[in-house]
Image (cartoon, rainbow, N blue to C red):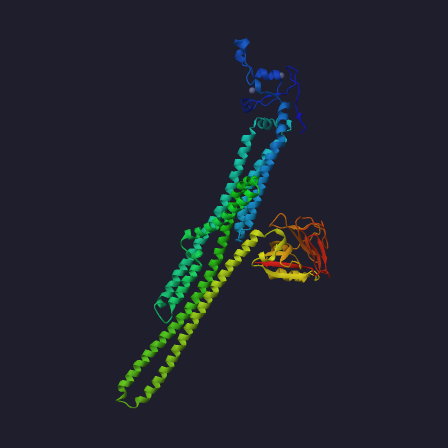
Length: 576
Ligand SMILES: [Zn+2]
Ligand SMILES: [Zn+2]
């Protein structure tokens, strides 16, 4: 740093250089910031009464605080790098935290655009305000290289600043900003809980209405309705996470999940203890924040599951209601028929009583009993229909249960993929661990990968599905020799550059490219060299590149160039 002292003119009284200033807080507060020659400064600080009355005992105040400007600037220069570094670190912590929170929000299982936008804006605003404040101190550090009217205030402030206190204040303030952001996000989580409570209440009301509809038939043996109600109760137990009016039960389940997570972390801690005692302190420090973010994520995951369950239950209720209506119509028909039977029986007995009087009526009785047989046949038919409806309902209930179990499993598997695989490049990865994934592409490198194939693949699964793409050696078909996993849309986004790959939002260490008619693949860095396929850094084991629409199949898996071979395959697995 270049030290310059401007306006270093001579004092008009003493002809000495004006290079001194009093650094006592009293004078700084009184804004006495002009440079003086030593004599004038001493004179200004001399007790005037002392001069008049006791010339030998005159006293000079602040004498110890008289400091030459070059010493002050030297002192600042010595402290500059430390102070600069401190501000840089604080700023970096802000960026890291901001990124972490934004990533968390983007992985949020709900895809309500506005909610996500608001949550992100909230994080950005809080961070920006604090970074602006850091910027102010940064500018202050940089502007104090020369002493003049504009900089004198900053220079003396920096000179007299207690760095320990200043740094502590900044760190505390930063913590408060981070806490505030976390609290705001947590509050948004609470809003969701309220939303669920409302939905549960609606289902409860629908339940009540349904029961009222069921009641008129509950006592009738013909409809075996009690069995259906029992099944409904069984199903409700399946949905107990949702329909339980007892909130503590939900919380207990969450607690169990959280506890198992905590146990897992405790085990990890024990392992590290054996491996390396020094690492323990580090882990302790990061454990808290990790645990908090894990718990938050688990909560969100549970909530997503709940929404799906509620939707399923609603569909189920609609279906049940339809069945009930059918049964009601049938029962009405049966009732009408019964009425008809009893009227006919009355008629028969009437005929019987007049039989002795009128022989001619004999014929009518025969006709009447024939009618009676037809009615009994019709009754049997209605019974059959009701049985059929009941068995259809039971089958549907069974299917529904199976579907719910299947969805829960699939959700868990998708969640695991999102948590453990998203954004990562894996070497020698066991395919058996890709639970819930389906194979969409599996072909030898002696076959060309065509543009048409790519377009068909892009249309065969959801863009938010998680795709694992890479190469498999025929010698070890149980493992991916090299693969990368990411949201399908990351992999299928078309790029143009043959020098730069596109950074994945899921990770800092994964870059995709998909240049039509040239090649598709991934790399751990942005820099690629698509000489048709990527031939940048031929030794890099984490680069994967496949020719597109080339008459020959193949190209690169890690550090191997593979053309027209049946020793290796390319494969794409997707879970959605
Ligand atoms: Zn002073
Ligand atoms: Zn002077």
